[in-house]
Amino acid sequence: MNDSSTASTARQDRDYTDSGDLKILDRPGPLIRRLHQIAVSVFLTHGREFDLTPIQYGSLQLVAMFPGIHQAGLGDLLALDRQTVSNVVQRLTDKGLIDRRVRNGRTNALYTTGSAKALIKVMRERLSEVDDVILGPLDESEKKIFMDLLKKLVDENNDLSRAPSGRSAHKIRQLRA
View 1 (tube, rainbow, N blue to C red):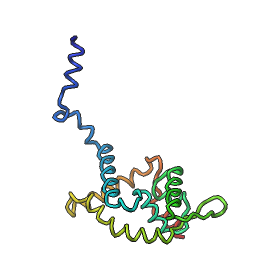
View 2: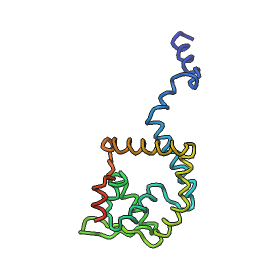
View 3: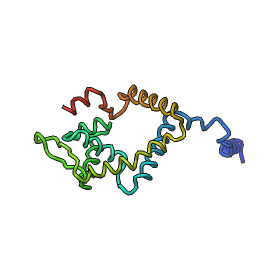
View 4: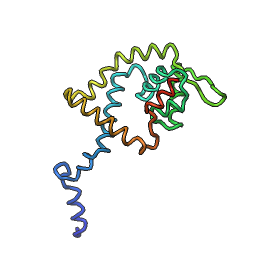
């Protein structure tokens, strides 16, 4: 075995858990990604019988809040690109939860169906514990601090996204008009 293969084997055998090499996993990006995985898993576990993803559920709630919202407006609020919001709306339409009506010949106005309204009510009651599970390890003051900081990071970095959110107060006022 030559010196270079010995050095390579030694690097491979090193215990990475005790070294500083895994610090990369403690950076904001990987931690946020991991928390997102956990949040989706908790949502899907608690809402298994509803057969909706978190994005589909959020979409239903927003369509219920803003009857007649168009697909682009829904995508803007959820920070989804056009193709993704189109797929989400199609799936919800196929499930009989959203009624899509052509408006102005080009845009689709979205409305929740009666079954969607009933589903939202049941899900809202049942899924209220999802946030409690995700934030469970934090005490009350830590929850408030965490949520304030999380909102600040999202709001201040919104324009860095490939699909910025249109959650501004001005946009929401336009949707309500």
